[in-house]
Amino acid sequence: MKLLRYFFVGGTAALVDFGVFAALVKTDTLGWFYSAIISFSLATTVNYVLSVRHVFESGARFGKHQEVALVFLVSGIGLAINQAILYLLIQRFTLDVLISKIAATGVVFVWNFTARSRFIFLAPTQDR
View (cartoon, rainbow, N blue to C red):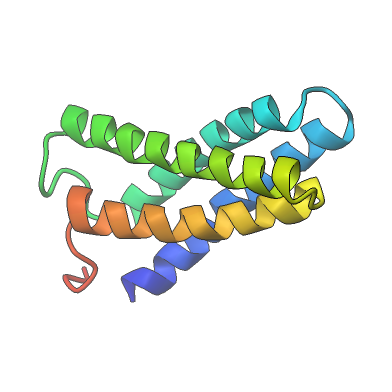
């Protein structure tokens, strides 16, 4: 059940990430690198707020400050994964920017759920 709820939460965050990224890239506001950082950061905030409301039990393993710090650590690793995939797909394989973003988002979705459910919040088998 948690995985299904996280799918919807993650999907909402992914829409924020992709929408902001696409808007910034397609309007030539910023290059893909900085657009990805901005969109990913906004999506991470949305994901955290929705996750602690609808998916994970906040404060179950760590105090609130530690939990937020760990979420940012996991998200930072997710951002590094995101940027590496975008670099490979856009710069090395010359794939379309938006298709590359979709691929990167899928990989980071799996990373985020796994890291958050195993290391930060209660395990997904402990459904509330």
